[in-house]
Length: 170
Length: 170
DNA sequence: AAGTCAATTCACAAAACTGTGAAGAGTGTG
DNA sequence: CACACTCTTCACAGTTTTGTGAATTGACTT
Image (tube, rainbow over all chains, first blue to last red; front, side, top):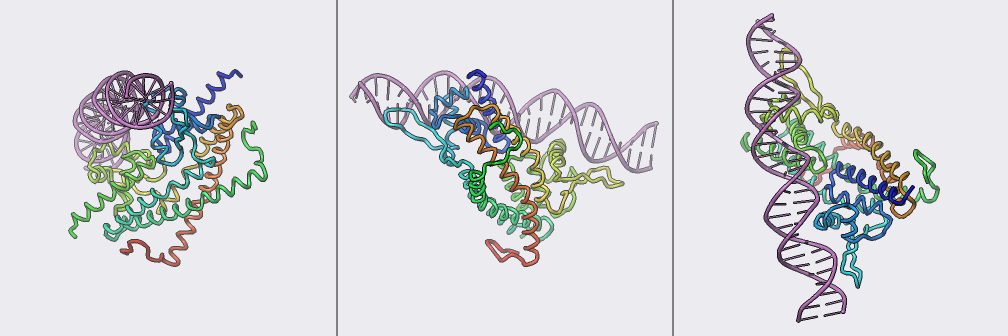
């Protein structure tokens, strides 16, 4: 397989995975940037590398990178003697980071549902809203322990490598 | 508090919660319909009730209701002697239903990531994609048991009612 | 079988979003 | 201190999405 083919394959994967993230609620450009950084071998990327690799303008990169930084997924590094920003994935354990950032969303939802309960009069609707709040609280508690369980799961994997499943082109 | 005030409060809540669902990836109109049905006291709703309550045309309701039915959240009932459709929440335990519908998404993601792994050459990017697949598989396994745990949690609550927390306007 | 009412489909208008090019701001270099 | 280079901001154009009104389809009633 030629090197160009390999890059094409990588790019196709990046676009597909970005689409998945997009469907899951992430904006298109942030999703593309994230997928690109995730699937690239380089540890850091300049804005122009990203613009080049994703075939968009520098302006689009600038806009896409901000939310990713806000989310704590990317960090911006500055290298002395180089005017360009260098972006890299914040933690080697990206997914733990992402799990951890859900807190404020749950807080917001809880406030909203609690206010709803205060405003609604007794009845079936109010009962369902109460159940909804209970569900989100339950979900929150589950997510709290998810990062822990994920790290434990990873540790277990590295100790005893995974048994082959599906495509084992390892 | 007047009855109109109460309805206004309910409507405000419906719109806010629909926004939350919207942010979580649900389309605007399906989210509004779902929030409306959830928070209303009536057990069933005709299309025109929904159109009236949400201030949109019948056409918009028609479009919004289909995905909800596909998702298995709403069902359409037909009452003899009445030409209109009656929509209601499929299960008294909505959230279990919603959790259960995630399967096909995970299957799709797994295929995509597996193909990605096949196409990528060894390196840091491929390693991260492998970790991503492992993460989604982990998440899938967690979601599988989530509905079970949620029902257990509910059962525990009804046995020993929840200790007051935040706004306990019960 | 004809009539009546409700749901759906379709073409279209309005609104929101996305990414661009150009201009401007900030920062480090010679 | 002026230059060089990069990032950012902004107004805009193209595209997509969203909801409407009108016409069609479908179903129950008499």
